[in-house]
Length: 79
Image 1 (cartoon, rainbow, N blue to C red):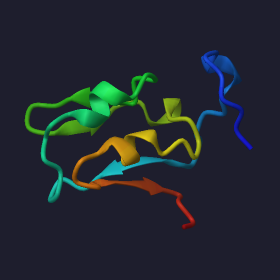
Image 2: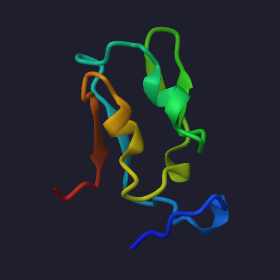
Image 3: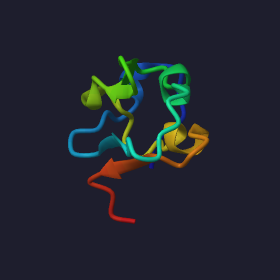
Image 4: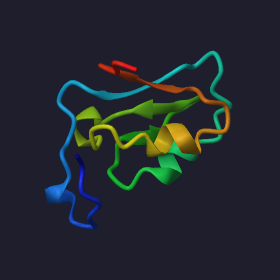
């Protein structure tokens, strides 16, 4: 269970679970970049890119829910 906290240090950071962007369906709106407060994404030349996968909060799924094209899945996801 992940406790909701404003303190980044108390959140469990992912080691083997992180977002993967499907570039075939991504609309390049950078919603994930703007949404994530942990700096997991960055504006790329053509698409958003995952630059800091270790900062992803395990099982958060916030960027996936915010994505207008459902283009984010997770490496290590068991669902």
